[in-house]
Length: 173
Image (cartoon, rainbow, N blue to C red; front, top):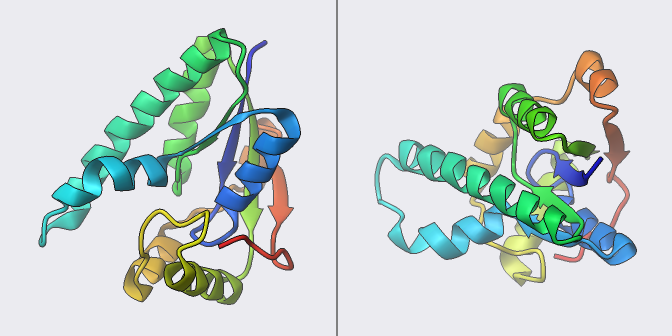
């Protein structure tokens, strides 16, 4: 069965760093929604009512990336997706899409404390290193952290999720 790797976790958990290392290890192709989003849509970001604008574009882009990942699979590539599926419902939709497409998902959920993640995001905002896509202001960090729904025991078991602690990992801002 064709395999797509999916990396999820709260903001600042180290998803991009982990995905880049995985891509190197397995010869995969890392596709980060935030990177694509920043390049495609940030220049058009409105000054007000940002969330409705963001949600529509994120959903559309996630669908496009899913379609692109299947094309990559057919070409023999190993897609590694970082989609920012922060809520359980959005992950369930992707699980169903994978089932319907006959694609196996290898899901990794990264975890680190809010304090560690806050420090990483502040450092990434400042240094703008290899995992930088866009500045994440403190209020957005807090909002995104509050939105994150960790997978429960059932989701972890049903989808054989590998939970990875990145608490002590150094990231490559």
